[in-house]
Image 1 (cartoon, rainbow, N blue to C red):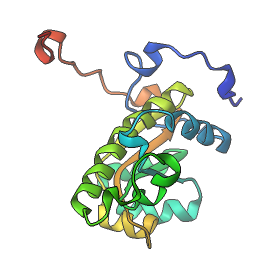
Image 2 (cartoon, helix red, strand yellow):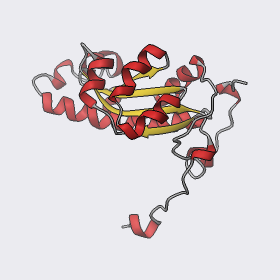
Image 3 (cartoon, rainbow, N blue to C red):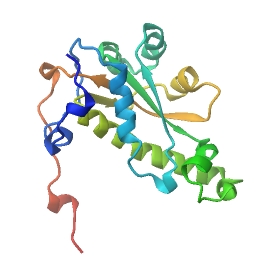
Length: 197
C-alpha cells in the first residue's frame, strides 16, 4: 500500500530520535509521486539568497542503475543495488542563472567574475539542502542511506554530463529493513557539544 503524503502525521521521533541510516532494504517500490512530494517539501527550506543550488537525479531504471553501480565504492554496491531508489545529489555551479526567478531582488551582476564565490555558495547551500532532503524523505515515511563512497568524477560524467553540477552525495531511498541495522551509536550530550553564552 502506498502512503499518501497528505495522510502522514509528522513527529520529531520520525525525523530524528527513531530515524536510522539504513543499509538493507525491503522489496517495496517507491512511487514517483512520493519523490515529487519529497522535492515539494525540501524546496521550501532556507538557502542563502534563496539560491537553491541542489539538483537531484533519482536513479530507478535498470539502465541508470547499471551506470551508477560500477562507480560506487565496493562496500556500497550491494546496498545500492538493493535500494528501490538511489538519489544522486549535486551542487549546481550555474545556479546564478536561476537567481532572476528565485531572488529578483539580487542584482544580476552579483556573481559575475567571482567563480570562487559561486562555487563556495553552490556547495555550501546544496550541502545544507542534502540535510533537508533527508528530513523531507523521513517526513514522508521513507528511510535513507546517505553515502560518500563513490567515484565523484565518474558520477558527474554519467549523471550531470554537459552541466555545471558537481556530485556531493549519493543516498539510497526506500523502506529500510530493520534486520540490517547496526546497534545505535552514541551521540554527544549537550554539554559536550554546546555552550550557552
